[in-house]
Image (cartoon, rainbow, N blue to C red):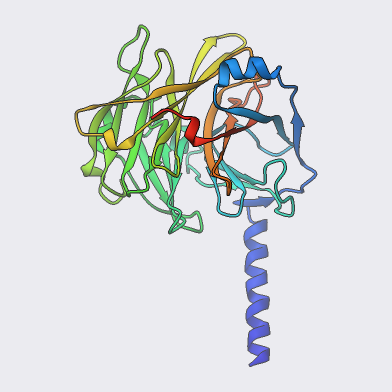
Length: 332
């Protein structure tokens, strides 16, 4: 019996090592992922823009010579790590500054296109079921969803007809599995050109890969001239929405907004309105923020992590923000 148990342990160790060293997943040395702290503006200036949110830290991230950046979605994992997902179908798991650095960062591929076409893996949004560990990705160019199992292997995909008209480069940019089991997806593209504030949305009663035909359309309305790029649900049921806009083309400069809304108001054919709660002004250390993750704390406060998409250019940066907020200070 002891020999059998020892053999099983050995085989398990070999399997884990093989998985960690495969082409799909690379273990990254801790000293390769660098966090460079950014100088923060004075507290009064931060409060004028961020309101109830406190900027507890901001860092620029770099990862040596690895294929890095382009992160458009961010998920919080149960062990305290963050999972960043790029528009090239790649991922990075890491412990943020101040966390348990015994966890080694990992970097690799979630999706691969046989034709090496970015449009087939352009993951702009992600959400996770905390009970099963399943992850859903939103593919922008395909207007489709991909479902991954707990081992992050694909288990299905679907292109709902309710999103077919969203265009090639406009969604689903933001997606969220709600605590009640519904799925919400928002299009980045606005319905109107001048001072846009209305976006297409679709809500599914359950897994959109399993029942893609069940999507019900609604209208999302947020701060004018800003597009929804990510969402996360708070413990009290409200949803925090990250929005952004391009304010200058060359070199690209961005601004953002945080808004809050009650998902109980999402109904087929109706308008879901959210309220602005913070301004990620261009005078702050911002870039193209596209990823949002909320982590509840034991004292009732929330840590809100933001990550930026550098668009794989030298003129932009991968930034990580740590915001702290008491949900009691948020409207609604």
